[in-house]
Length: 73
Image (cartoon, rainbow, N blue to C red; front, side, top):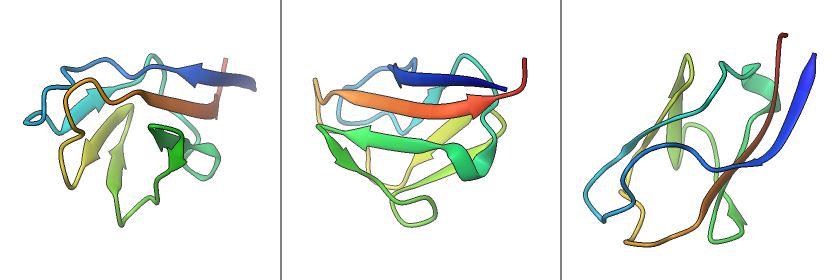
């Protein structure tokens, strides 16, 4: 198992886009997503499908998004 910290999900942070991708498919229980340093809640702030994060409300332009998670090698 590999642990990644501070990964910036790929996707346009433009106030409209809600879909972002991670480099790997996380083990769901291990995923921690942060927006401007605040931890978001799975099922309340975003959803996870494979390696795709879908936000309920689009991040504001230029917000810093980061993800910490574990994945299988």
